[in-house]
Amino acid sequence: MTRLRFVLGDQLTRGLSSLADIDPAHDMVLMVEVAAEARYVPHHKQKIAFVLSTMRHFAETLRAEGLNVEYVKLDDPDNTHSFTGELARAVARHAPTSVVVTEPGEWRVLQMMQDWDLICRTDIRPDDRFFCSRAEFTALAKTGKTSRMEFFYREMRRRTGLLMRADGPEGGQWNFDPENRKSLPRGHQPPPRRRFEPDAITSEVLALVAGRFGHHFGDLTPFGWAVTREDALEALDHFITDCLPGFGDYQDAMKAGENFLYHSLISPYLNVGLLTAREVCERAEAAYRTGEAPINAVEGFIRQILGWREFVRGIYWTGMPGYAQTNHLNAARDLPALYWTGETQMHCMADCIGTTRRHAYAHHIQRLMVTGNFALLAGVSPPQIEEWYLAVYADAYEWVELPNVHGMVMHADGGRMGSKPYAASGAYINRMSDYCKGCSYDPKIKLGPRACPFNYLYWNFLIENEAVLSPNPRMAMPYKTLSKMPEEQRGGITRSSQAFLASLPVWTKTETPVAEPKPGDRP
Picture 1: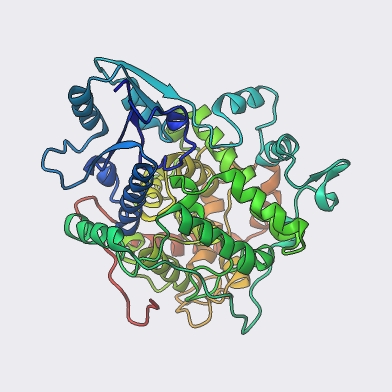
Picture 2: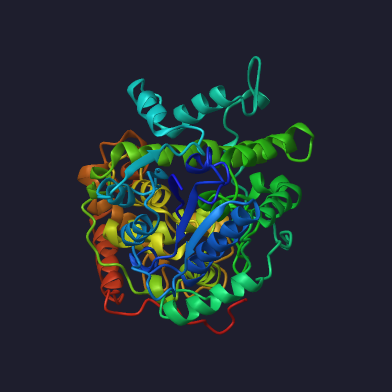
């Protein structure tokens, strides 16, 4: 054997750079399940099961191809439970001439790799599964084309040719977002979603996770994620055929008890490597060109991948490690326990956290404008809410989670991700969902015991951050309204906010982050 090919759990792509020139006769693929990666934050049980099962299936695919695969399972009695420890053991066993690995997605793992002290050479290769490499993003930043996502997105459209024609963008404009903000009509039924029954490998993993991580947040079953490339491609086809046509109109909509609506549900597959960004975008573009889906739906979907996904990765790698340390609004409140328990009378928060608990999933508006909006308005400490998002979602890896939460949700980066905070009162949630119907609070009431907490927390957020935010031109309108507000009303807002926030129990790391099912929760 000459080279040891080390494949991480989010690198399950056959065309991975570290596997590109593998010699089946001499090289060995190493894959390891280690407890350190399951526990550095208390990951959702389904997330752990999803990653372990996809890893085991990928290893079997490589073996079927004739490659030599050494796979260390979590319950191996000799497992050291760290990447460094397992790699050192493998190097000692096989004495390779080099270790070949694709660069990791997370800063902490890159630091780990750079600290490896092996008896052989380490070859860390670029991850070429993205449209824009780390080096290319850095070069674009020097030209000013990454100052805002929209500028970067248009450049990527030009470079890739996606949704482009000779004279400019398809449809005559770059962005159709104004058409994509409809709420669901009364009585509207989203399409049923394709889910996948666990096979023998997944069933074994589910039992393992139940035994070792049963105290972690989230329901382990029912488990419906695809765990092979073949099933992930089927999930993509299902989305393109059954959901993409309605995705544009209703991508910002929310409905109580509806976990998925028209969303793709493929982000876990993209981020673990079962699907590639290019094939997903090309499949969506083909649906537009054959008339299967309208331009507003296809453009909005491609923008999420070609625009936002690539942009946040670039922000992460050009900004780390300092990016994670910023706290522009000096937010310092401890994370309320309701994020782990789901125990709250706010229907919107209870529903979104319930969906998260059941499926390790919530769509982007639930994450940004409900759970994220509340954390912003409450002034939650950025590291605490970032750890929650990283732990509870199956698609969450730090490179994509951190900029989205640190920048878009918490505005902790001072505007690098977005030009203004995504702050909203209860009126937005009422307009885009049916959560407010039957809620203990009323979005039309501004103060008092039945007032929606989002209402007074919104204005309190503006009051508390007036010195920092009022100079922002995009905040001129709300601050103009605030300037006309009587002092008595401002005082009532402050008192109501302080009393409400003080009434919320906080979560501490000594507590077990488990949310129990509530009566009436839908499976």
